[in-house]
Amino acid sequence: MLKTKKRLTALLLIVGLAVTAVIPSSRSAVYAEEGGAYDDLYMEALTNTTAKSLYKTETVRKGTFSIYYTTMPRPDYDDYSYLYNMIPVGDVEFVSYMSKKGDWLEVGDPVCKIEVKVDEARIAELEGDIQKEEDMLNTYAQTCEELLDKYDRMYQSGGSEAELAKLLYDRLKLEYDEEIKKRRESIDALQSEYDGLKMAQVMTEIPATAPGYVLHLESFVKGRRIEPYGFVGVMYRPDAATVKVEGGSDYLRYGLNAQLVQNDGKVTRTVDGMVVTSLDSSLPPSLIGKATVFDFGDRLREFNPQKDVILKVERVHMENALMVPNKAVYNDSHGDYVLVSVNGKKTRRYVLVGGSNDNDTWIVNGIGEGDSVIIK
Image (cartoon, rainbow, N blue to C red; front, side, top):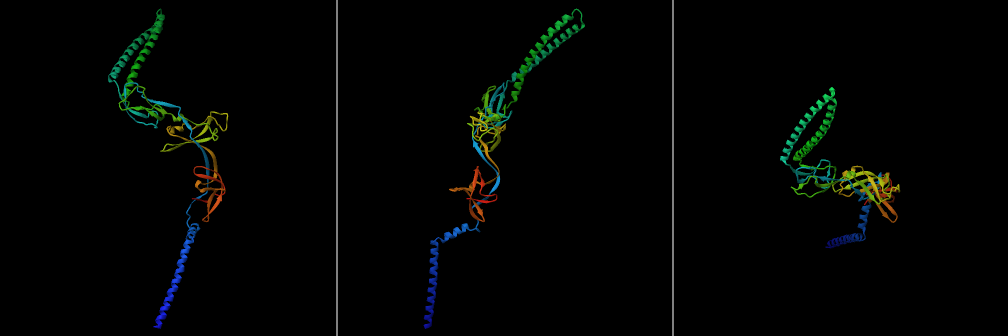
């Protein structure tokens, strides 16, 4: 019985010691959490050099750096041409358009589909009249040529009738030439009408008579009659257009290279040119006048005159410039700086910035080629 009590006492003592040991440990965990120990561990994980960086890095590179002055110029499409029905005979009826506003057309490209009705009886009548006139002309010419030959032989034989023969020859020859010319013009007029009718019979389209962009098309319904030389639409001639910047600019001077850009929602077009003149040419080299004019050659034919254009003129051009993305440059009260990754750690370096364009910043001093900058 005594041994049993001793064993029980020893067991209770061991349990008490175990409980005492457990309680302080739990308390310490609570205090550690309340004291921010977990936050310290989290921050240590973020700054641990062996941990993977949470930021994207970009290598400082060398290349060509440019800054552009941009503005919206005014293209002048002063040269334009009309679209019209050039079929002078027959009844021309509209069927449907084969082009639309904004299309570029070359000479001969179809503008609209048509149906042409001509007078078949008139064609047959003209065929008969032309043949009749040709026969009469041949008969007249043959008769006159026989007489002219007779008078010429009489003159060549000499004698008392030679002078009379020469007079008759000259008189007949003058009448003959005038009559032949008059009859030939009459036949040509009949032939022209006949050819026009025959050509109109096979015409199914009205074509463009000059290259350019379609600016406007008339509102026709199917079956509408289009009069001879009737108006169909208007075309711009962008290959003959000029580009102006009203009021000029300090950035524009004679001979300066420029680039014209247009984005019509489907494709971006660019063309290179240069400043060629100003309305106030007494101010070289700045050329600040009422307008500055640019020459882009005939490349403007690639542009849609219905869409805006942007003019870009290069203000800064640097070869072998150190560049970083714009997102890598920060600023505080001390100036511009970048975050450089050195052995996995972030280091702030203040830099001298030369300028920025849409994508990059030119770094004049403060970092070197090959450095890794951090982009947040």
